[in-house]
Length: 272
Image (tube, rainbow, N blue to C red):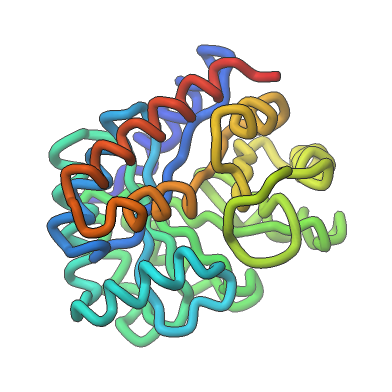
């Protein structure tokens, strides 16, 4: 079985055809448990997410804020492994038929073996991989393996990226471009800021790929604000926080994820 980059492309094109941004949710695998994490991904899809990014928990998540770090710690203490991440993708995709990506730092993939990881992610029905810390200059081996197995390679651009750098990054990527709305770590914020709109404009000047914005969106109003200028709205910490707030009550956590997805799905359809 090959990966489902086409499913990802269809989901993003479908949202565009409806004159709205896509809703992309992020949830770490193994949190609060492996089974609970799988159900959380399904709940996000049930609520209205178009795409879900499954996080591969890392012991040193340098780009992640305290909320996702807390979730990663819980998952790692529970002994989550790459096999559990792949199982999360496989079961969520099998249950929903919707595009599921893995978001991971490069080191675990490098240690596991890029070809092996790409083959197993594709076999699980994964649509691709987001690699926020993999420099484009060092990505050729991964990109070849991903392309061979029908996977998207999503790179992250930031407001600090110069135009020349943006062009280099977007030329190497596939699926979509992940635009970090501001400098700093992940987490919800009171305002998503003007930097994001300018970054999307500059990124679009270099590519026809959809440009999706993450880092900071936590409610329907912010989702609508970002949806006005981006092709997709990425939300992570807010989903994780809802599960943490449920205090171990899995049913309550899943209901909260579903409700937030529904709220955000309404937001991306409004557009400010």
